[in-house]
Length: 309
Image 1 (cartoon, rainbow, N blue to C red):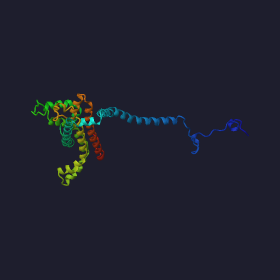
Image 2: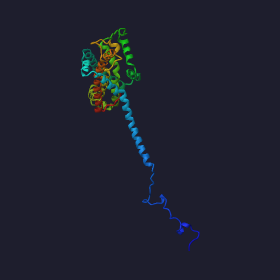
Image 3: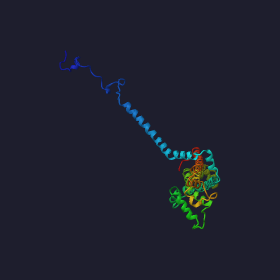
């Protein structure tokens, strides 16, 4: 007999019963509800991530182009504005050749001297503890912060006609070398110092315990490990020296065929409104510096030398 109090749905007249809620369904009957906004939002997220990744390199390339590539392109255009013959005549005239030769020779000598001095100073800073060590370390970086014209004026006061040491280097090649040594020393020290700090001192102790002398430890263990960083510092010092102007312009005297370096000759040409010739000599310096920097990059990649400068 039918129960009159039963719900209408149980009598067969109401709507069919609904499926169980998802939590009550079997594992094979679960249904996923798709959100129509999920796909567009995911695409926008991927597009935004791609745009963020591309924005960084694009900004870097744009900034580099404005500061480096465009000026270099303008320099090349100006150097060859009157043709190859004019360019070649500008870089082969006797005064330009003399200035370039003096610049390259002094830069090479300074790079070698500062490589040895920088290696010794790096040893002192890494292996020794003494009072005033932090001051000495900060003093090495002074040429980075000091304007080069101030450095030239300081050297002129120390080694000029009124030198307190009675050592007059003004108007001499030794004076130019002293100025270049001053501005390039930090490159040689800071290239070697972190590599030396990472060397394991136990290897040196083991070699000494086996009877190796300090000279043998230096020649067979330390120098082979430090040679790539020494070469990198020497290359940076050489590249800086060939284009130095501020620190040498006062102490050199700019005597043609005697103490006139390439940067001073370029300045003289620009003051004479001979910009194509000045650009031509500048291109030579740029090419030399570029070759040196490429070689430094190869040495660093080949021997895994950290870029500390």
